[in-house]
Image (cartoon, rainbow, N blue to C red; front, side):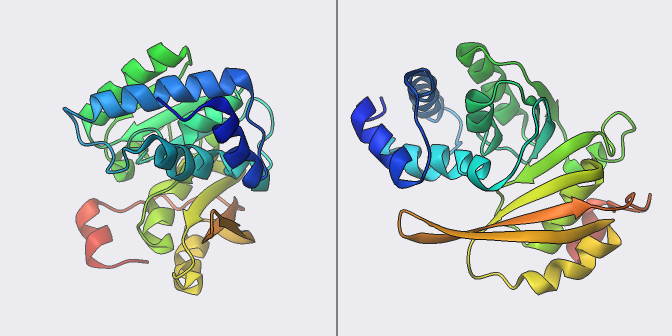
Length: 234
């Protein structure tokens, strides 16, 4: 399904990454199942195998180049969709303890079957982030949270920071255009601090990874319910 190994390997090299034969085979299985499943459930508009490689797989794995993820870290992928960015990361780093959260059960069903096909372990949660983050078993229980969603930093922070332990990280993948200063107040209110900004180009497109350190507990009033979040951002 993916282009041949040598082509994929060259794309990984171009991004400053290394593609092993084992990872290639797993990503090939992932791509094939994604395209097949997409015929009945809308998971992605990107269906060309080379574009899946570039815009889903490499765009996800690139996190490992810029973020130090300690061994056996627990990661929650908030609004994971078809498993990006965390499932490709898990394929490369099987020591990661992965939790996949999405509000649509159809996506969770896809991810459950995908994980079986790929032979990886993960926890699957069907629910809204602002509700799940208020459950004791998930609140401030993770070393890292991540999101590749298109929402702005203020919104994503309210959804993602409450899951992170004090001392942990929220990793937000962003494009070049957003004014990140507009999200700084939300980050601070939620117990976080923008620690670092990694800026890079991937296949000619500018990208940013925002590293947000959790420096104190999130006040219990956050996250608010969905109507409050939509009505007024922090």
